[in-house]
Length: 112
Image (cartoon, rainbow, N blue to C red; front, top):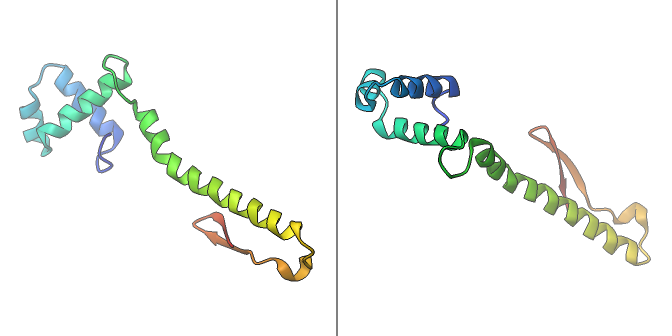
């Protein structure tokens, strides 16, 4: 996956320079970046184009988002489990809820 420090347009232009026939070492020296970065970007571009096997940039992004989605689902499950527990017994609904709803970075968080 490409480093976050370089914009996608910059990486694309660097790859275009190399594909136009300029040596990787020369491009790297002129732009002040490492050879390995250019090789990595070029390989990822070939993967995205379907030339080489591997995970595309979109697949990397999807995998990176999965832990957050798992946390969200675990929170939902905890809420449902707690609600099920409360509804099983003869509990006064007015005094039994122990949820705390918080806004955290634009998301609704629930603390049980």
